[in-house]
Image (cartoon, helix red, strand yellow):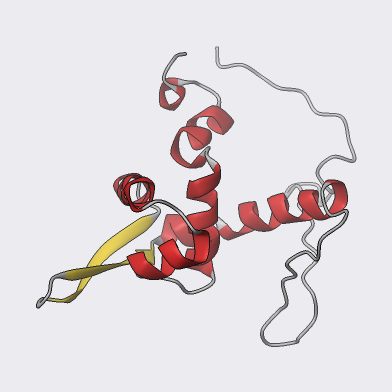
Length: 144
């Protein structure tokens, strides 16, 4: 398969960065306030080698920043960058799709606005028209 990061499609390029479940779940946990390796590992139940690789990739690709919080012993934490913060609507959109199409059975995670206490029900709209994405036909234009 071709390297997705070289594709003209921005969806393909983005998936090259965060296209696996572990990376997306790490980003979810980072938005929930986790920053330390052991906290990510405990939350996700992920093998340390996989977590190390995913954190390194997310750091290299600019979604997380590695910061030293202890010199003795040397310990780092992973904090969201501006690009990482901008990923939150993507997480909410995936969650909204899952609530609609994959929520049967077990209790599902819910998200609330910390200031108002209301449950968040994300809607993705087109900034130019105000129309909800998915309610109008689309056309995909390939680069010339």
